[in-house]
Image (cartoon, rainbow, N blue to C red; front, side, top):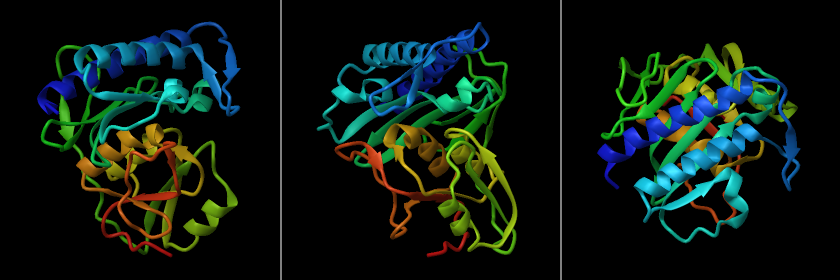
Length: 264
C-alpha cells in the first residue's frame, strides 16, 4: 500500500462524510430504521457509507473493502483490506449527544496499519501519517490542505491513580467489576471510537471493553492508538489484537497505555 497516497484520501473522505452526517444531524427529525441484528441505522449512516465506499473504490480498486453497512454481502479472503464504519456511535447520533465518529482503516496481515477517526460534531480529527505516527489536526478543516497537526502520545500511567474511559451506551456490571481491580483516579465515559483516541492522546490510560463489537468499530481507533504508542490486546490472554476474522466479530479487549499493569 502507498501510504503517502492513502492517508490524504482517507482524511478527505472522512471530512466529506462528516459533512453529509452533519447535514442530517442538524436538520429536522430523521427516520431511524432497524437492521437485521436490531441495531439502528439512519440516512446518515447510509449516505456516509455510499460516499466513502465510492471514494475508496475509485482510488484503490484492487484493495478489498469491508463496510458496516454492506457487511452482509462480504466474504473476506484478502489478507489486506480497507474497513469502514461510516458512523460509529449511531445511538449517540440519534440522541444528539455528539460523540459519534467516521472511521476508515487499512488492515494488513491482521494489523491496522493506517486509520482516521473524525468526530464532526465536536470537531476532533485523528489519523495516522504515512510513517505510522498518529496526530490530531485542529480545525477548521480544509479538505485539500492539511491544517495544524500535533503528534499525540499515550500517557505514562500511574497505576495507583489511573484515568479510565468506558462506553457511554454499553456500560455494564461486568465492566465495572473489572475496573474495580485497578487503582482509579477518575473515570470518564465517551461514545464510539473516541475512547481509543482518548487513550491515544493521554487523556485516559485504559479502556476495557467487555461487550460485543465488530472489526469496523475498532480498526481505525486501534490504528490511531498504536500510532501513538498504545496497545490493544485480547481480554482473555492479553495477546495482541488481530483482524480478518471470518465474521468480523471481536472478542472482549483492553486498550491501554504501556505501563498499565493489566489485571487478570
